[in-house]
Length: 281
Image 1 (cartoon, rainbow, N blue to C red):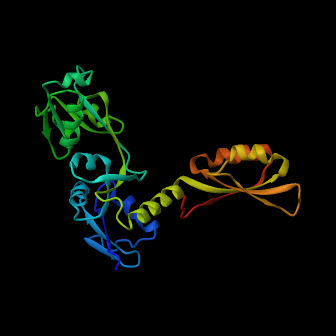
Image 2 (image 1 turned 135 degrees about the vertical axis):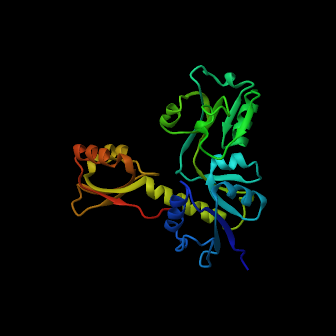
Image 3 (image 1 turned 90 degrees about the vertical axis):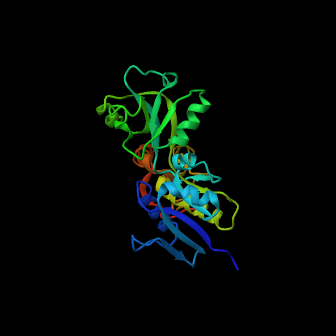
């Protein structure tokens, strides 16, 4: 009898909605009751466990659960046995140091107090840089730590930096980490994980690409193929008029309108764009 694959999913936070949507798009059962802690999916041989994002790496790393979705930042901060299996292409964030304007480089943190919600991650980074600092572990809202006298600098997620500047802080030093949602497991070779990985990758591909169909004079095919090379090569089919062909290729979604303009200027006609609902690449 095949063992049920136990999958940890974020139950709240910035990763939760997208992770749940991707799993549904990948053909798995979704959570109808937002209070449900577990959801079995016997058709796919899996069971979902909805947990705090920060706890997922601990559950997966201990072997209590087989695989999970969490942030790379949370995985590295957890110091568990879990490994990154695959990036998932959402939940991007950047970790930076910030402090008073007099701080210019990571060396300025020597002997200073650094406040962060990720003590393991930041402590490891400073240790690799040869910097001895006191880590002040806080559970969120670290940008107030300097003003309140708890720390001399902070290490936190940065988007525009506006929140930090409002507290009189400036970003400095190197990037600590560029994070995103990742699939993790302590045993990545377990049966079922490859299917999950492949399905989630297919959802990501479907989100990034569209299908483009167009008709084209056959003598322009080489030039058109340079514009729409597809993943391996475009699909070319004959039309009733032997001087024309029909072409289909995958095109990056963000480039679709520019590609349509180029094809039209080249001589293509009947240019159509279709969404991709699922893919296996």
